[in-house]
Length: 535
Image 1 (cartoon, rainbow, N blue to C red):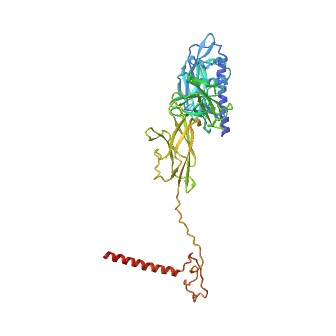
Image 2: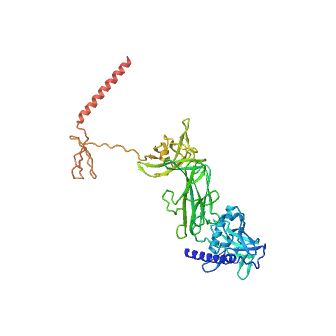
Image 3: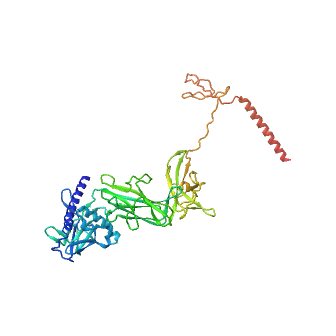
């Protein structure tokens, strides 16, 4: 299926490039000829959205939404010249210097991003059952065609640039333009995506420790490009905004990304790529900020390719990158963050195990009146016999030397458990101190334990002593009555005996005598009392 899809896509791409090359290169190469050019004449743009199968058959693709933008005009000085629209001159595009179909496709990619940046409006239409879209009575100029929904899970249409009119060999200037945008259906293909996560940090200028920050309300822009220099945007939605609201990180995603190599950049307020690792002064006199890219959540040395994302149906269909901002100061609207790592142990009958119960922990702060208040966002479900990280935010624009919090095990609503009624014994709750010198990080270990086995009754061991009186225990099949030495007449054998020592050498007769004396003395005492009461 994969080979078939690749071949099918190759045929579609080849035919689309061939048609575009004939249209555009022919048009530009003969732009100077104006024998049959009619200034101001309108034309029609006929689009066919189709795909060529591996057997050469053509399949129309219906219900595809495309948007048409006018991106250039025509000037005439006895020759015809196509000129980029004034709102797009910042792109530096010169239509008359484009010589190959590949250059035109790259220009289409650039313009697809530029029209969004320039705020141009377009005209959207949907392909019919035959894959047809017709724009009638179009003024002369240069037009850009882009897919209205680049994330469409069913089909991908590459941006395309065409002119009205264009020169067709043997015909001259043609005002009825026929175009076939490169389209590929996604049948049988895996889903692809590129993710970029933004994180913000403060760098202590004395120790160079890196501390995570939280933004009350901040917006960042990231862009996806087709070249290492960040000059060729990836389709019209190349730019994504990451909005941080009371957060330290956020993620942007591009879906349905075709096979290829892409490059990630952070963008400035104008949507232009910023150089990686170059300090930028964002607030005069306060400090600088710069950004880098990581391919892993953990920091590691940059090898120069961290902003590269590879997508392939036969390889990795997903890519994840981390764009980190490092501030030399704490900006307005930002606050430092601390991290508490909590390890949860669960013991049953002294053995580490997991149980069907859920456990929670909350971070509490002591108020001025001595009461404890649960900090917002810190109630966390614990992982049995594992660890969780809890983040806490300090007041805005502060850099405390140390902060003390109290951790308690709680119920699902954040109420500390009542130890008198809680099913488990809890150990490890208490205060945690976050120090600036330790980048505001600390840990705690909480153990829950309980016993389910009943307490065993101690066994008394009797030590045999000499001169114990023997007792007799009948054995199986022996009817001898203990203490009787006469064998059973039907048995014909000797009596079986088993001697068991009681552990006491005192003759039993002495004990009987002492017991009788105690009874006599007790009776006499009781009689004397009764006599005394009568008096």
